[in-house]
Amino acid sequence: MNKQIKTLKALVLNFVAIAAIIIFGNTISFAQDANQAAKDDKPVSNTFNSGIFLENQTYMTNGANVIECVINHRFGALSDGSKIAWGLYAPSNIRLGVDYGVTKNIQVGIGATKNNLLFDGDLKWNILKQTNSGKVPVSITYYGDIAFNGSPTSVFADPDFKGVYRLSYFNEIMIAYKFCTFFNMQIAPTFSHYNLVETANPSVPAGGDSTAKPVRPNNNYGISALGKLNIDATHSFMFEFDKNFSKLKIPENDSYKNPQPVIALGFEIATSAHSFQIFVSTGNSIVYQQNMVYNQNYFINKGGIKSGLAIGFNITRVFF
Image (cartoon, rainbow, N blue to C red; front, top):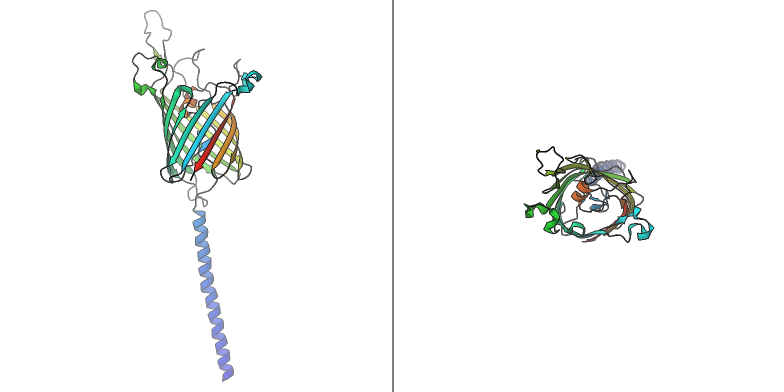
């Protein structure tokens, strides 16, 4: 009898052990699956190191209550030669700006730029963030700014000048994708608007209408493409290409030419709170609509015109 009881106890203990393994094993498996799913649904990280990228923005916004200070600096053209240290001693352009995270997805900012005495305000809204699982395939952000030209009224040369003519606008929808640990890209359709553009008297037959006509469109449509090749967690190669598709309303001449694309190549060193980007670029206006609508710098010498390629740098510092 004792032997039978011992055998029965052993069977019961074995059954309980097997049942525990099945129940708790499944529980652990389900917990691991749930944790992995939660991890996969998180936004991808390190697509870009900063919200600033060479001559444009990235889709990234600062967190709530985070302050970011930005310095953008552009030297003179490299083609100016050794007499002025390849642009280092030439008149330079600089912008000082501050961005503030209103929420984790919405950011506002202000800035002042030396050339044309520009003052600007901007808004950035991160609408979607790419997830590790691919459930959200891309990151999408809207960026817009409004700039005020503080130049003397005489600069505008308009007999019916109004204060609203000082304003210009830039808008873009940024679509970013992290391909892998080493390579990321962003593309953005852009829209730039100037309340006032230049006018000129066209050549007309005697007795014809000689009223001054707009030289360029008020509305300008373009595209921006940029990419980052990561060397490691803190060092990256960067490239950018911005193209305005809108053309002059008159034939090109010595005074007025179609805008040239902005091309930039650079290198970035970044930490959790800093980003330092040094690069060469054909865009020296810093403010985006100014670069898109008025850039006249060639990447290489063309048609007897020297390259407008120049050294620039951006510095950002985040305060959490």
